[in-house]
Image 1 (spheres, rainbow, N blue to C red):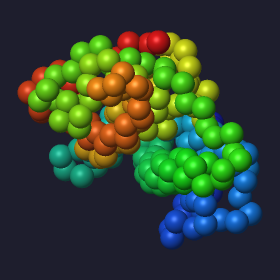
Image 2 (cartoon, rainbow, N blue to C red):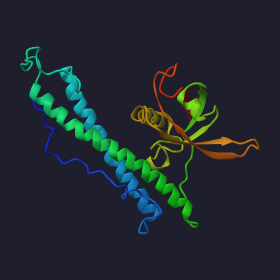
Image 3 (cartoon, helix red, strand yellow):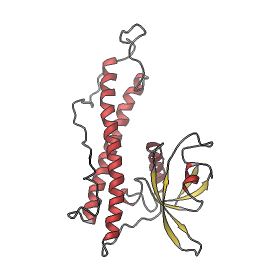
Image 4 (tube, helix red, strand yellow):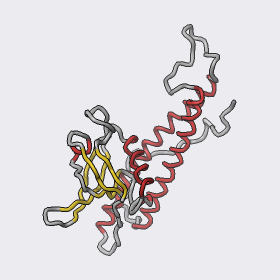
Length: 231
């Protein structure tokens, strides 16, 4: 069977190589609203890439192969139990899409930081309202979250790209936690920026920025070592 939706000549999404496209207060033409719109557009493009990668991954799954499964026999002949040509085309499409996905994720991260800096630099700007969408229920001290400073009772406002800008903030429920799970998998072994709100010693809620590196092999279950509940 053929892969009707795949075109190996489809141009990939160009990534920013020098960071000039990142949203920051240094870009005079940018307004808060236009910066939000630009960031939402990047997120939509990343969602589209994710959907295509999932579809292409399903093609490989249907043949019972991965990106590294040998396509030849021990004596160098193409295997006759799978569609070798289709698998090669699928792999050829997946490789640049993965690179595009990583580049877009990095650009979104820069955009998020720039957007919040821009909001803070404008005295009359309404700012970005970030209501919490999850509460930290348990934390393993030796886990990545515990090492990063996450505490029981913290209210999560932003977790990587999950938060107010993508509509998750404020009562995101299980859908929000699903998005968080996706972010954790994407950032395994890499730094993930998280914004939480917690009470200080005077009982006042304060925003706290944290950096978590999700990873396996820390001695417990999961990549974070904490449990979140929707709010």
